[in-house]
Amino acid sequence: MNITLYVIQGLLACIFFMAGIMKVAKNKETLREKLGDWTDNYSENKLKLIGLLEVLGAIGIVLPIFISSIAILVPIAAIGLSITMIGALILHLKRKEKDKVIVNLILLLLALFIVVGRLYV
Image (cartoon, rainbow, N blue to C red; front, side, top):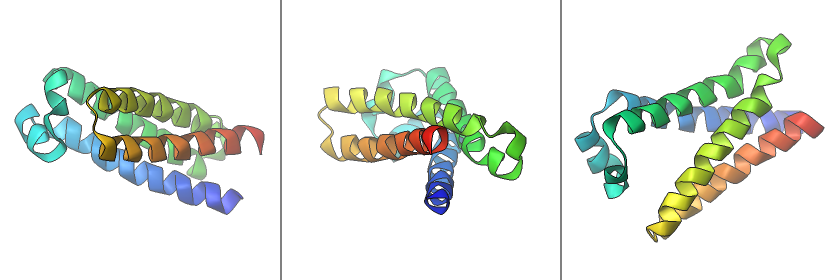
């Protein structure tokens, strides 16, 4: 079980780190081209904030693997990523973007699996 949790943590960290860095580094027009017109719902600063939160969540979900004394950070980071995915899920449900809803739902379930696995197992 522990190995499964580590693998999922690494996978989520990679996904959220790359997505977050892109949102932080690119301008709104580039993000619109790469991610879709949902970015029109947010200002450039809000998109950068979302990206920063994704990067911090990615770091928080794997850093305790190397520094075991801060292990509580993993479920906290996974809860934060879950909240981010709930927001994304709501946005894409309203916009009837089924393919993005499915991706958001999978990422949400993986993050919740980490929360439960690290708090209760």
